[in-house]
Image (cartoon, rainbow, N blue to C red; front, side):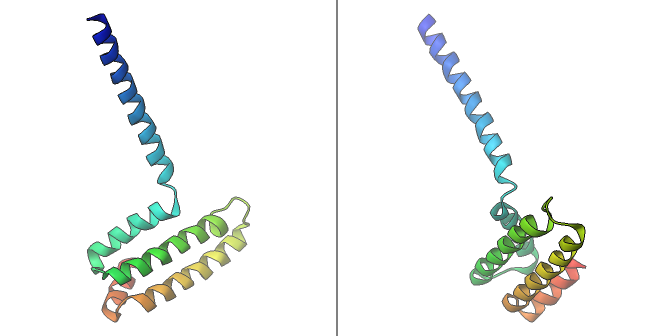
Length: 115
């Protein structure tokens, strides 16, 4: 009986440790550009109803935007003037990508949502 209780206690401790490790990995992955892009794409898809091809293209554009922001806009090594110029440059590039992928109706609705 003691052996059975010790096995059950050991299994319980392992289960708790596994959940803690999983929660930590989820919080670490939340900052990855792919995770951020996936969340943004899901929010946009609710209102704009993308096709599969649009989703793939927009996911790539969102990931690229997040990578560029992380590297050139939000970096501690970037001066405020450079960050502002880089932000404008990458916003324009993202806007152009949206223009190419979305239909005219979707694009105008996206612009309205953005403002």
